[in-house]
Length: 602
Image (cartoon, rainbow, N blue to C red; front, side, top):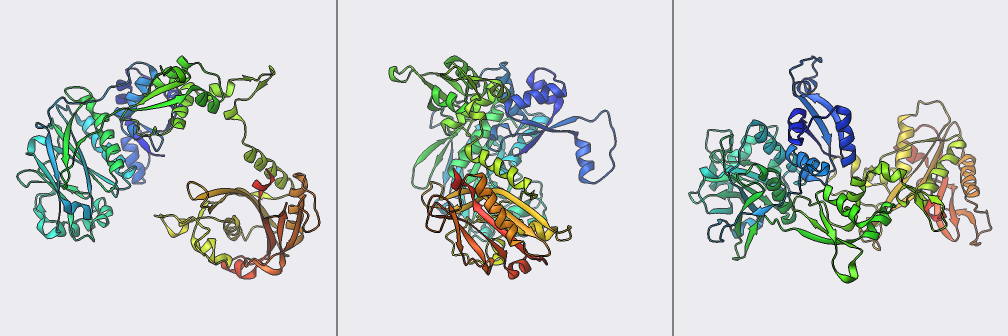
């Protein structure tokens, strides 16, 4: 989850009161965020440079606060402080609106057809009469960086440009031209560069070189001009120096170019809703008309409120506590979701929730339910007893273990009592570990492949617990023998019958490694797990219990392996690990391994 750094004193000033650290931690917990660290700017620099700690009483205290990954509105002090003020009841939910200007008076952004070749979308807005100071300016720039790293996916999906409107003259055009025909002075430079020269220039820039690949190989580069052919920006790389914003800037022009229009709208709304409180007319944003190459016209930003109907029974049923309509609407209002009871005769038990443009994370009734649970307090849910129709107390449904998790815990306990040590391994692995190193072939019908892995070690989702278990032994091969380890965890396999195209499956895996293979030990473990689940050993073909039959899996030694068949279904395999597989994982000692699907017992 992303972490933001805000000045403690400035945050407390924005909240209208001072908190002790313990009080602020409690407030964060109540709101569903976390105070991760307390530091100072100089301490951060010293840590980065590996210098010794020094104490300076005059340093500004920085709160590092961890926020949910989908709460883009909390990525700056302005949005965080506003959300906490509403949560604490010291501020009403803001109402955002567009400036009342005619369509003819709006600034225009004309989109050329060539932009479809590289970065087809653009959305724009204007903040009029903004008052910046150094702290506000820094926060404004920092929010752009946070959004670029988060929802913008390092500028590949969306790139934000902010400009001093008073230094420009509309209307604007968004074009895509050959790099040799684009000339301008980029931000923080004094020399005029051609776009292709600029790409070479920034290959030595530690910050900007990470974004060059987005457009570097394209025959055309995206570029934004004003009416005098002044370059505003070369997205997603750099803005022009001419339109740079400063502390004296009063009117800010914001443009977001994108390959994903939905993400661009969210980013633009996040920027304008967070900083429109500094406008001369608070929470009023001036729109811009974007005219596409086919003549279609759209006005941005889209600040329309999304209304959603959610039944009271849905919310209380999932949380597991009994709440009245007024209580639920009050809790939602604290979370910046304007809520009221439905007036429709046949929907008296429904709540109409108005989702503001700043809350792009609310997409489904479950998101509304989550906000109610946060505002109500998870500790309060834990302490809330439910009285059933027989008059007895029971735990709230949201606090009871799912049957699969309860079974998993029981199996963990039983296997641990057999002398095995539990391990926890990564759910992501390399395709080589998932298949080749296990002597398996990848027919591309089983494994879920990661689209943009950070490294080759995490390019697929495991289809077996075996790679992780063997890697654990390989890293501990000098440990005294025997090594007896197990894991209860999920694998993921492709499944066309599921709406997401894949499904999770809970597995138990255990491995014995010693001076001998220990086949009888893992066989005994399988029998013990079956016995504790009340499953009898039966003759082959009998569907009332389980039996074992010969198998021929490439990761096991031929003739020293067996399939586990339960109620007519193959649920697992155990055997002596093939010497070639052990060699692939650099394990010198013989091993036996068992793995089975424990969901089949439910």
